[in-house]
Amino acid sequence: MKILVTNDDGIQSEGLHALAEQLKRAGEVIVVAPDRERSSVAHSLTMHRPLRVERVRENYYAVDGTPVDCVIMGVYMLQPERPGLVASGINKGENMGEDILYSGTVSAALEGTIMGIPSFAISMASRRDFKFKSAAEFALRVARFIQRHGLPPEILLNINVPNLDSDEIRSYRITRQGKRIYGDVVSEKSDPRGRRYYWIGGNELSFEKEEGTDFDVVSRGCISITPIHPNLTCSSCLEEMKSWEI
Image (cartoon, rainbow, N blue to C red; front, side):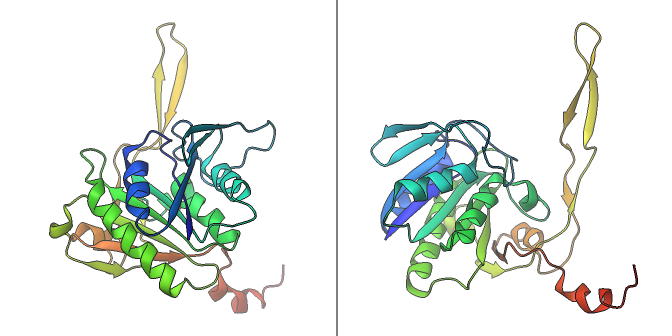
């Protein structure tokens, strides 16, 4: 099986290399990743300029575009044999709750799912001193499971791993998306000439404590696996909304 590996932290990321090396035990790995960090670009596509692909070494390619661009280019370059799996990560930082809406890591896996390829995203719940080995080893287990059993149609797996050694991780749990609580989103500052500028991004992040969510499970030392899909329809609202008179 050919496995397409990508990320949003860039072609030089240690997490990407750890993931690719482990997945070589499950199939032929082709790495197609952004040429630089592309965090928080969500599901953006590059459509108003040409894309350039550079061969870094055998089966490793850098694209001057987004993670979604990388999946599309990777599938295109592997034609006529499509990959049997898309694996995105290992991300430096968790992708839980509303993070998934911004995440380039999750969006790359989502693009694979849209293209009909079984896909998963995997992230480390930490901001430093990453223990990528434990996440990479679990990714191999997931890849081998998907090889044997596949995934439900239009479903991808969003996996978040606590930053622990493998023997410290309690287990894994199937979870639902939690609720992120963001701090101040925009901060205003002044440059040396007195002109105002702004940084987007909350500094104080927390989450709603609710049992069975991705946040809850990871905080208790377990791996979270959340099934998500590209259909954003609120199915539970449909019947009520049919009675609306707008």
